[in-house]
Length: 257
Ligand code: 6PG
Image (cartoon, rainbow, N blue to C red; front, side, top):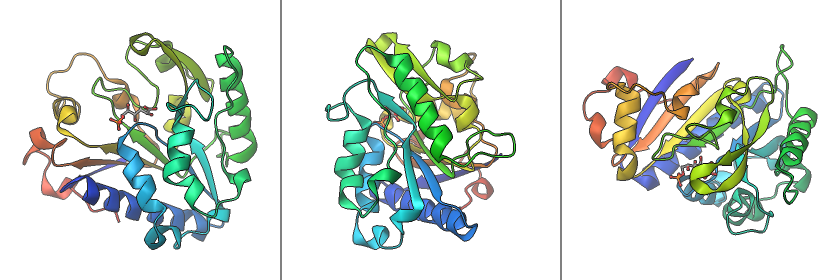
């Protein structure tokens, strides 16, 4: 795995860099003769990126018929619920581009049947996603965020999903949120060609420094279990990277676009 870091001036710069990287990964897939597959992240940070991707400048550079959109994780709520990652992505992007509805693979919701949702989503992935030589699904690009507790997707500290090595999708009860989630597991996330972690805001700066500088942390945070077989881009704004000043050397700050 090759790790890249890029510190953007602000959130707008971060989104522009992320959009250019997204385009690069899309072009690589299409040039290889396959559809481009992406797993979107939830949360607040990526929403501005999705809105930028829906703009003419970016959306007109993509043939959305060659794109399959999945979700890295989802809350166990109806797709029209305010907490739904699908609703957020549809409002910011999917509802504003010319993408066939059959290319959008949302996480099925069954009230009170979280395992059924996970198994149905795993079946959707099995049906519609490229599988590698080991018959493991392989995304071209997975977008991830990082919570201030070091979680990513719905891989939260202290949850059983962190141990899952067989299922590609699992249900997980998050005590801290008193809610169920559906999430991709490490085996699928770590089989991805390109992983982009979007981290913005001062609230993340302490955790980012702990993780990237490995300053004496005993426990590993869930985001540290992400070690893709391809490349991994840590894309931060200055606020989130405030405690990294000068520590991540220039040569590591490769511009990946
Ligand atoms: C979700 C996300 C989650 C998110 C982090 C960071 O469904 O909420 O998948 O993992 O990426 O919580 O969220 P922010 O980017 O909003 O800080």
